[in-house]
Length: 63
Image (cartoon, rainbow, N blue to C red; front, side, top):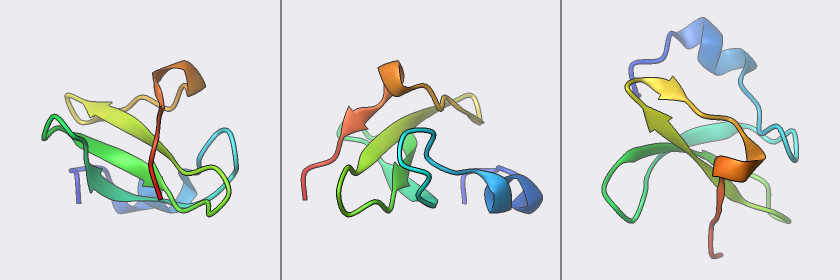
């Protein structure tokens, strides 16, 4: 887990698809939250322990 309180993790959702978010690591080795959406999987950066849940900051995840 990325140091995000469990109660926060429970309510976090992808702002684009509404899908759950899971821990991941970006291509640069930095932590991110990855949408579990099968249609439009997106990954959001986590900077200094803060998830940046902005569509403009998201990257598409190849499936």
